Length: 104
Image (cartoon, rainbow, N blue to C red; front, side, top):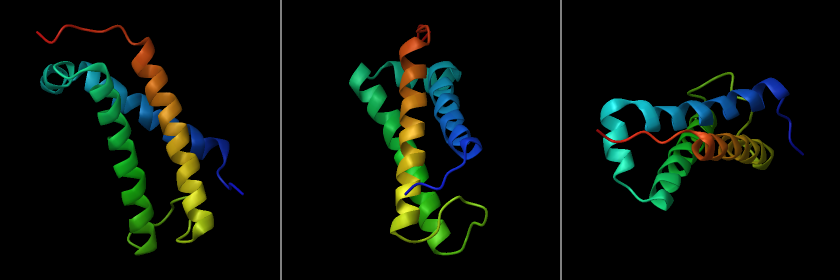
């Protein structure tokens, strides 16, 4: 059903890790992000990943981006879902293990 290579899954997981690091350690974004509740923070990171995956899938349907590991079909949507799951696992794991910094 899924046709993603380990390298492709790693790339999506890595994007989840990097986004979590950006939200936690980029100075101005950190101040805004840390003012939110834990659930809101998780939701923001998840929504960011979902928007990214859906935008990439939509752009692949318009042939605007080449090289994505899915086609504009239900099979491609399943691959996009697998990519999003890899993103979720990595971003939320990173969020849980990162030491929290103060917003100052």
